[in-house]
Length: 342
Image 1 (cartoon, one colour):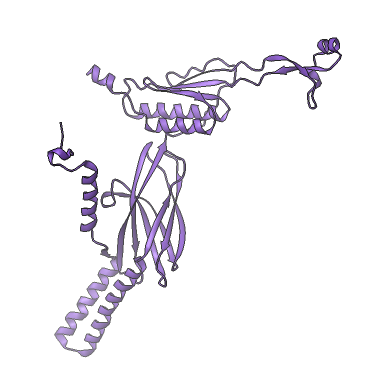
Image 2 (cartoon, helix red, strand yellow; image 1 turned 135 degrees about the vertical axis):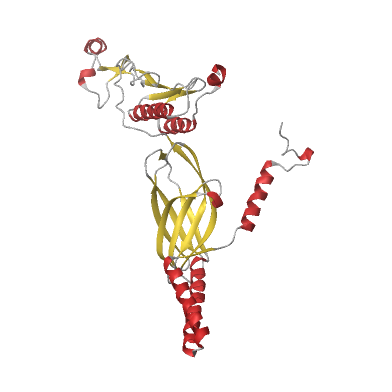
């Protein structure tokens, strides 16, 4: 048994250890990274050539040109730093994201400097455990962000699979002012998102129709329709076809048939998880279950979900839709059967 996180054994708790690791990575990470572009390498070669020529010839004009080139490099570093300083980025994640479907993610780029604008800002959204080892899933560009102003940009991101996503932060880059260097900084901004299974267009069953045979993914039952509950006095707006003439003549007043509201039809989604293996077949079954559930909820059915180990009671409305999709986003095969078979 691993007791490395037990304080009685002299170890740090796991949460404190993780926090210390994040602090150490933040301290060791350089505040800026600088990478010459192709034009920058050519500029370096030209500066080196002018410097060698000035030293060999002793020509004062060559020394003046070398001084101008070096001042050009210093000015490029100062202006690029002013473009990155004070830049803050905020991410707005959409409420629903489906696997394989592009969804718009909005990035708000804010310049917190009082007087200096930021130019040619490229922001990359990073997905991964932390910003040091994260991959870029989208980028946006802002030509100018004025002092104390916010620019909004959006990009489209299509998650490859369902489940939880962890955004680590942003990489902010600029080549301002001369395009000689690409200066970048990392911003930690954690974000969580839940990706729902892919949903396809499915035609819901008609109420009162027999159970649809779709293997092990879904089943349903229709409602009972309208039923006569009794008689009541005629009211404004009642149709004459509902008047019960015999009872009306006996009581000398108009009576109409009072019908109960249509009973909601129920549909239960069945998903086989016991003994299933992770892979394309299981993901297709999850996607089909989500498609059936969403289609029948949109048609006004009461929809439930049942697996080999869990069950969601039938209900209707947007809340049940969220419960169904959240459950299917995190469902996994039950590997107990595989372990018993092995």
